[in-house]
Image (cartoon, rainbow, N blue to C red; front, side):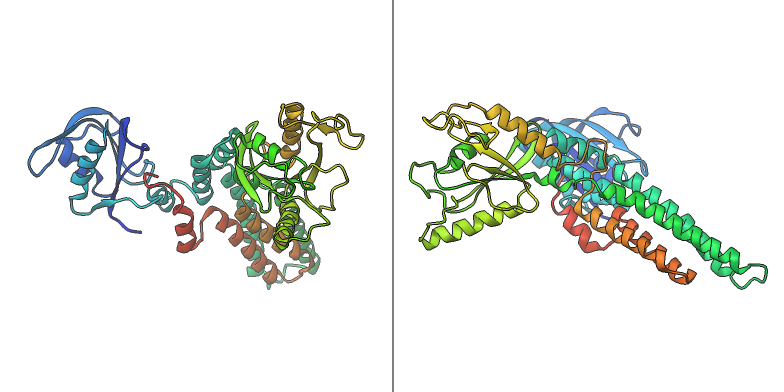
Length: 435
């Protein structure tokens, strides 16, 4: 880990009322002290005049606060300078700090990365913090906060502790397997007990995996608007995203490609996709490509809003809401086959559509009290479960011990106890500079 002292603005875009500059590392207090003259006691805020140590020029009048290690956000000495939020003030203070030996500008996510490497947080909490910074809906905020506060870590630590105890028993049994007073019947009973306990832990993990993935909560529920040409898909799409995102025309086949937009409705994030009309009589090669992409979008969707009067095509995993569109037009007031009748022009039926969409989407999202497992967590938990399940057919304690080690390794990778530098680079590259 690089031991430089790092500096960054952590309070967002300028200008602002207050700008918080963070300094973390072995030279943090010395670097800040050269500007402030003296630092207050730890965890006490004091107003100080900041000056350039080279010529004594006044930089700003700021609130200075510092935290002594290891009980800080990064696990290192950490100083906060609460400056006036002027671009010129921030630039002058940053320039003066960076002019000191051993001090450099922080990289994206480096404060959080140091917290991870110094044991202040684990990998799941870092992921939760990243999700919290990107949260745009109430559901995303709640799930991210649960992970950032250690919800996933506590569950994984519980399973890890149980597996460690099991592994210790197996290792002890292997060490004493040659003792004369260990009878065959006792060995068989011991093996049955170990396999039963491994199965029990695997069942607990499988129960956590049975719920919906948090990835949909993070990325948005995928909703595809589909149907024949000129069935009102683009008009409804524009109404749901509240802007003119798609071209609307009475000419059939206006939409020839997928158009996507992200939107939050009722506290749930969605990715809406408008598609080309499904026309069996088409002859245009461009329209053919659009139809093929429309069908692919439907197969990848969580929810399909079907605006056709006829039955929709077969879709494996998506839930289909059949919508009777343009119900304000003559002859389209009722449909015996479709429960939802709407008019994107007048707004009639849209509240009912949103309510049905919300209920359907919630079935695809984790419950508020459930573990918000990312796809990465789910893959590793699946690996651990499969390894534990394979113990059922094993008699050799040495093989069982190796399987327990494999399951533990998968759990440790979730919390970052063992992981690669490249994976950490990928995670923290998405963070802002001040985090």
